[in-house]
Length: 350
Image (cartoon, rainbow, N blue to C red; front, top):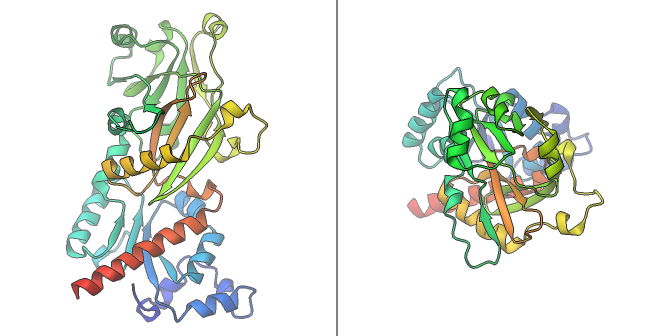
């Protein structure tokens, strides 16, 4: 951790409204009290969209009260000439940024990088994304956690019907882009009802068997060891009538966005019941260890009529935490814990 004086004036104002720093503002006294405290410097490299959704005023104000300063990293200048940082928070996918960050960390191993680029890369491909889930050992619980059966199609749409038949997949199928690159296109999902329409799809993609789940999805947010779950409305169940009377490819809406919240809806308790907390804690520990990540979320569904069987259908790095109730408290607590660990380590090494 660094003293307040280690941060330049320009960095102090990088993301905060100057009005919040005024002693005459309602929050002025609280902010002023934090000025002399040890300060944790978090450098961030995020897209403009991510800055707007994540660095909300409520997070920034609470962070300053806790002695945490967010500083924008200028990607047009060498990273080694910026800082000093205690933590680097990023969500960039370019190979160039990955190289810059890895070179920087070799010189500054004391800086915590959230998260390692090579670990994030594992989630940028939907084929490799769920591999770590396939052999999860959660045998100490009655609940089963698995992934839908899926098939990767790299090219030649005309070959998809034959490939699906050979793999023994059951219609309908959810089609997802193979690559997750942070663009809206990588989150465009479709539902294919019949075999003939499969050749209309656009590879490379992943085809997953659709699992009826009562139209409810559980978004499991993970921030270090902290876990928070929210309900979202999802795709309605598909019955025999639907299969017999629907053909073609249907574009699915962004069902897991905050606007689709189901937390206060009047739902059947058997559908609305959250996954058991011990199961989520075990799942979180296993995935943190296997993925080497601390900031991610899991999209999870419970099979309709099978209360002990859950499916993980997606894993996302550094998701939209700003949509999570109370995220500013959980995230700043997490950053403080990292800062304390870094400080203890520096004392022991010194």
